[in-house]
Amino acid sequence: MSRADDFERQGFLVLPGFASAAACDALMTRAEELVAGFQPETVSIFTTHEQTRTSDEYFLSSGDQIRFFFEENAFRPDGSLRQDKALSINKIGHALHDLDPLFNPFSRAPGLAALATELGWKQPLLLQSMYIFKQPHIGGEVTSHQDSTFLYTQPLTCLGFWFALEDATLENGCLWALPGGHALGLKKRFVRTPGGGTAFQVLDPTPLPEEGFVPLEVKKGTLVVLHGLLPHKSGANTSSKSRHAYSVHLIDSTATYPRDNWLLRSPSMPPRGF
Ligand code: FE2
Image 1 (cartoon, protein in one colour):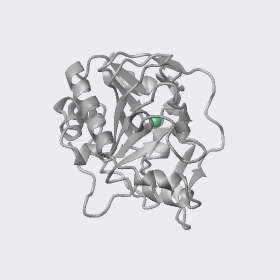
Image 2: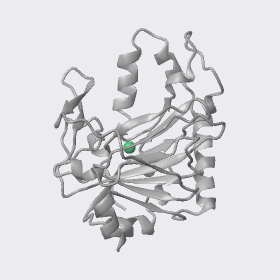
Image 3: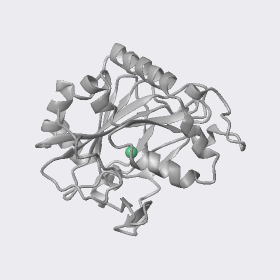
Image 4: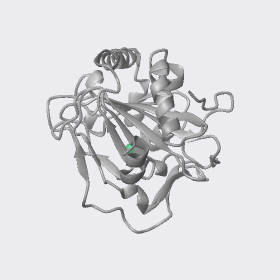
C-alpha cells in the first residue's frame, strides 16, 4: 500500500528518520537562542488587569511574527516565573518557517515538498509553524482537536507536518491519534469575533469520540503527517525529560482563506510555498 493510500485510510502517517539527528539538534539549539534573546516585557501582561485583552492581541497578531507563549503553570500568583524562562515557554509561533534562517530551509526541504505533492496538495502554502517545548513537569496536555478548526479553508486543505525533535513517549506527552477519525467531518472553527476577541463556531455539535486513540511513541527525527481533520491530542509531560517538537502547517492556495480566521497575515507578508 502506498503512503498516499495509507494516509487516506487512517488520516496520518508516521515516518521514522525523516529528519537527521543533527538537523533536530540544530533546531533545538536555535530555539534555545531565540528564547535567550526574548525579553519578556510581555510577562507583565499576565500581571495586569488587562491580561486577557493584551495577551489576545499578542496572540492574534502573531501570524507573521516569531512570538513566545508561556505555559499556563509557569507563573506564581504574583506574576513572577516559577522557574527559569527557558523552562517556562510553551511554544514559539507562528512564522518561524518564514522569518528564521534555520527554520526556513528546514521547513522547505525538498522531501517535504515532494511528500505534499504525493499526498495530493497542488499549490501548497506554508501557513503556520510552531516550536513546541512540552516542558518537563509543567508541559500541559493538549486536548483532542482537529487542526482544520484553527487553519480553516474552503474547501478544507489543512495538512500538518509534526517533527519529533526528541524521542516522544507516553511519559513525556507523545501525540495520540484517532485512526480514521478524519472521516468524521469538521466539528468547529476558531474565528475572530467582531468585538476583537475569538470564539469557537460550532459546525457539528456531535462531540469527537473519546475512545479509540492510539499513542504515537516515536523516535527523534520522526515526521508525523496529520490530516487537518484528524482528531489528535497529547498528554501532559509528567516526566523530567522535555519533548520538543516542530510543526509546520500547509494549506492549498486553490482554496479560499476566510478573513475571520484567527490567523491573519499582513498583506505585505502573504504565505509562501516551498
Ligand atoms: Fe494539532
